Image (cartoon, rainbow, N blue to C red; front, side, top):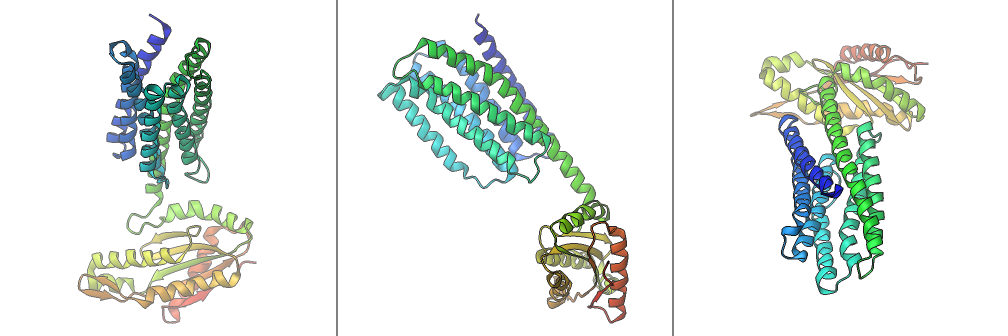
Length: 386
């Protein structure tokens, strides 16, 4: 038996193993739909290698070739769909499906109607190459700073695309008739590239899923479950770095410390469920009024803190007043009741990147105390850092 036969058997078996691994990942790591799709991609890949292994069993070479090429494109298409779903990429997958159908029709045309060995062997590979490049772009653009697993996956996808492009181009150079020299070179490149890429891509996808899980656990540890804001730990972890970033961007930075007025009274009148409703709805209103680059954290109870950076000092200073007005303007609906909520704010202007966040919060808290003394539903400003 030839080395190619054993390579095909290895690809078939590893595809089944990876399909099982991703199925288990789907079941144990939060039942992410994209993990199930990736499992399906490897099942289809196993069907592809099984088809190639069973080539001699097909009475029609046309049936064999169309089945093998279709499995190849479907496997890559499912993999791409999984990446689109994971990254929430704005890619219209049905268009990719239509494109795949058109490529299959073209392969059939050059295989049966107007025979052209080069085109019938290369077109479906070029489709796979385009999708591999698309996968790389999707993964790379998913976040501002890619994680090591994502960089590894992008590198593997691009290298696989490069070698498959070379293989497809060699196949295309055959023209209308089989050229044994080109065919041997095509086979050599294909059967060196595919097994390595097959394992490499699967391993890095598993690493990506593991990294995602670690990130989710980190988010759970630093996020307040009730309001969706950062908790105290999360705010302290991220605020100092974001402060430095704002200062380096020459933005005017304010730290806003605020809490809901007479929150105990709300709890006493409407119960803890009503108090929770007041907290969550108020936090939502505030989050809608600030930018994604701003950081908001729930420090404890009804107390919150926000770090904001704006182009001008006036713009940064006005945020607290806008938030105060937004909270007080509309009562919060709870069952058949309307909860009137107001909040008081303490604001501190930060001008230096080496100011400890703890000190800024302490001064803003003192300003908040002044706002409470002035009758609540007020904004008070602390002395600015020099």
